Amino acid sequence: MGSMPPSTPAKSLINLQLGWPSPRLFARDGLLKGAGDILTSDKETAAALIYGPHIGHPPLRTSLAEWLTTVYSPKTGPVSQDGIAITNGASGNLANVLQRFTDPLYTRKVFMVEPTYFLACPIFEDNGLQRKLRGVPENAEGLDIDFLRRALEATETAAVAAAKSSGRSDEPTVKNGATYPKIYKYVIYCVPTFANPSGKTFPMQTREKLVSLAREYDALVVSDDVYDFLHWPEDPKAPHDPNAAAPPRLVDVDRAMPGYRKWGNTLSNGSFSKLIGPGVRVGWADCAPALARELAEVGSSSSGGAPSHLTSTFVDKMLRSNYMQDFIRSTLVPTYRARYYVLMGAIKELLVPLGVTVEVNKPTDVTSEIGGGFFTYLRLPDDIPAAKTVAAFALKEYALRIAFGHMFTVTGDADSLARAEADGGFSRCVRLCWAWHEEGEIREGVERLAAAVRDVRDRVARGEDVGSQLSIGIR
Ligand SMILES: Cc1ncc(COP(=O)(O)O)c(C=O)c1O
Image (tube, rainbow, N blue to C red; front, side, top):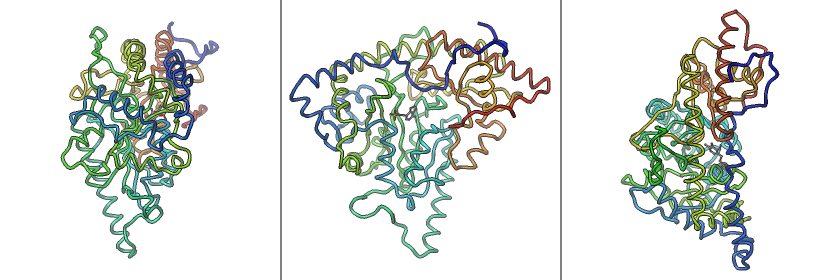
């Protein structure tokens, strides 16, 4: 299909914003089999339908540890189940982590890699950390570590001086005592591998520097490692190596560096949402054993048992039977891989000639398979309005939905918004997802985006005001 004149009634919506797997990719058969294995056995049902152990279903902690060992081949040896707590997914677990390990007064700041996974912001706000969220820009090394260091230094100096001048001790005041044995001064939130939204992957040096900084400033790095399992070669003709390790997690980098501490400074936030389907609500935390044990004592688990206990018993069966591993290898990776090449090919053919650039980095020092995750990230040319306007225009005139830079600012951080809108800022960027639509629709989506870019450019050249009549929700 070529460009579609705006007067043509919009076809059905193409949604390249949605970061959800298409329903045909849900791991339904394996889930059904897992559920059957549990619910047809009196013994298994008895263990699955009681309140689960706070830290999670023991067999799943074991099967996860074994699986994660094969996925990451950590330098420090096999992943231990002692550091694993079962969660109800990355979002729910972030909330639990903040409830247990941050204090709304004592915890000084939350640093979020920017552009950020915007839906994490309300989770921090719900935990009393509003007005404390600060963006840390990405750069060619994945993350501007020097910026983060300066921000930590300045914040720490100011916090210590404020405590001194007020004469109060610099201790947690809201959450203290035996219930809260560890409160971090800082939280650093990131998606270090195949990031949402930017698709970027941190090279090794960035990972190590980040962990060192976290140790220096008593920060907990929460990394959403939810896309790590979906990777493939950049070259369409290259064979996929099912044994290629995923980039090392920050938690494994922390464990491998001398001086690993009792509580650790890293927590890997894992999830089956992108592998089974988001409704499954099962995930895991992998962190220092002391941290995992303490996380398990969050009030809602003390009362209700491990989150998602019943479903986690089904997921354990899926891992033990190798269904999950085979499904990733034989269904998810080939499907996403094929869609990725269609998307990248169409971008090269249709958008690059219009001045659009792909902003995703390729750090070959952490993985030989640099295609992966759900997203690619593009910068629009400077002679058209910001991505927010282009997105609103594409939605109205071309029935195409895309995610745009303004969505990825850090809530409440005026500097984050200013950086987005500065020259070269990420308000000119868009995120495209290949998880929801099939190959033909993805190609058509890029055609619609190219038509929208050309159309906007023509209108701007004619002196028309493209933006002021359009609006689009940021969240
Ligand atoms: C970076 C990131 N974290 C967390 C989530 C949500 O994970 P879950 O469904 O496990 O809560 C997503 C889903 O889009 C995501 O992209």
